[in-house]
Image 1 (tube, chains in turn red, cyan):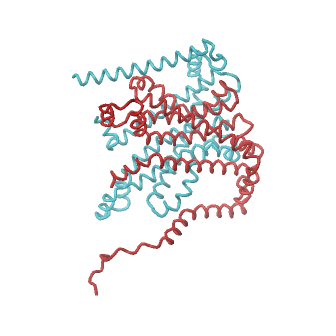
Image 2 (cartoon, chains in turn red, cyan):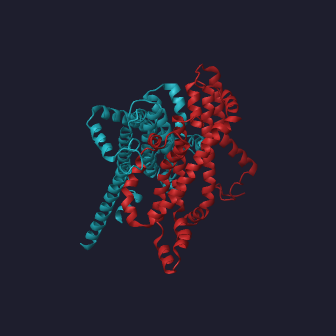
Image 3 (cartoon, one colour):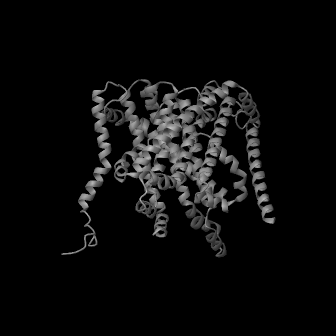
Length: 274
Length: 266
């Protein structure tokens, strides 16, 4: 008989992988499932016409978005979003690197950038409308002019905060300017750049929707506003659902890209933490 | 002495360059319509915009609209912050609740809040309440996520120490959880304040409840380009003011914290 009453022996055996996966699954999907069920029950009893049940919304989703609507509304919206995002990342990173490396330029532009960053991006839509009219170019330009600031400012900060020992090492090894940019400055700034891109992503999505709600004859924002004006409640909900799905999808894709790009960085942080 | 003077020199240089940048921008703006690059009907002269701005500043109606925008901003931000603080603390402190809500949060958070504008209009019509739905939804997540991280970030050694010293739940909340979560909360608050302002103005533009955003939209549809630019400048100044105030508040409340102290020692 052992005299120990405490748990000095081997630690309790870890549960089997099957149990762990099952419990993870339950935790991940349990609450959403319960919410949908609760909503379904509530909507059959309630008479509120603005909250149709999940089944109705799902049917409306399939009817509305499967078919021509993908080509007519979803793809134009997404392509404007993609153009705007790519342009703001490319321009933001390029300009941010130049500004971040030259101190006088940074000091020259700082108050201006602070001001432009503080302008709420959606007010640029009327300005874009004045300058460019209700065109596709206007929407892309508006997306760029809103989403570029987080990318630009974070790039500037990231480039500025490059480790000085590494910069001096690069100098004394006489590494060429382009090599230094590619192997030192951009990698050093990449965590900050990715933070900026993440913020720019949500701004771009918002601007895509609103610019279409205002002046458009196609696109997701236009469709949702149209459904609302015509009291097509279930269809409107299906549009909100689609926008939510696009938001989640973008977040997932971004998370994947970020993990790939910053693999070295996360690895390094784990090592220093351990 | 010489250290002080170089620091002052550096500050002076920064100030002068900053002003030079601003002036250069304004001159470039003034020259663009003057040289006919863009018709002044679409890009008015800078001087006209500023004249208009000062006219508006003397108008009581302008201040009333500004007041309406800031009222919906303040109400929305307060409601969102309180809700996020309470829910975030509960969810952050209870591990199984955190796991259970994770999927919901990850799905609801990326939904662009402007997607809810049609729903808000259906529910509340063209009033401030419709705008508040959007503002609260958008700024809630900013604070909520930060509070969850902050509350869960309590140092394990400190927590065990507090337990073995027999601190009550309330003492642990105020001496352990609150100081740990405060920097996160302030970050969330600063982000939420900016987002709430963006959505207050957006809602006025799209929904049409009275305020600055509606004035931008009305000026545009009336073909009053000078008005559009003047109000855009006003919203920029408002955003700048909100940023500066909240950065200041953050510094004041976190004066004891490493992240702020470290900056000041340098």
